[in-house]
Image 1 (tube, rainbow, N blue to C red):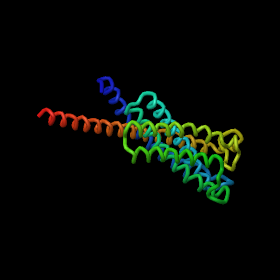
Image 2: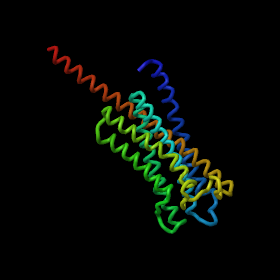
Image 3: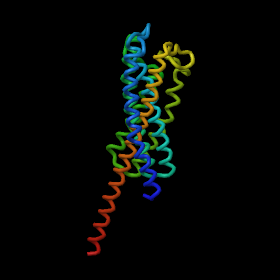
Image 4: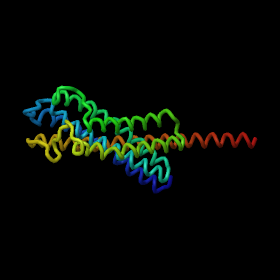
Length: 244
């Protein structure tokens, strides 16, 4: 690692704790505003408050998937540990926030539709995308860490990213029961405190996703450096035995 890279990494390290503190405060403020400030929606009732976590989690899942897509494309173009770490961190973040989406969605659906699940186009494509990232992480966790495994996982990362526009536009293209709130044709958030709660949730979950990705990239790079150091130590030991 060059001196310039060390200085750049040191500057980012100094920003990590302040950003973590801001993210924590925003998450707590989101919870406070959602349950104590935002009014109960007249038609849906208390269950509507799931919205303030469901939609930001979906957006955070998109961020993780986008990071995985970028890291995967860059890795296939020019492989290195940092690009592989970005792809892996993005896939893990997509799984975490996708799981939140897939849990909160059925809870909301039970109130809206009378049952927890239906094979709605947006729900189906979301599950498909989530399973792709699960496959990515399983592959990387149990099949080794060689160049072949990394490239195959990067291909899965690109496939998952290609599915994102399908998720987003599935309601417009194929209809379905999935509610539309903030997009064109949706009912919107009528009360100002509802809008504040939603804005806080979006900012908080965006920072949360970025912090998780950042943390996982850092950890993965440390793990890679340790693995390379162990390999170098083994090579040096073999060279010493050969000389003797």
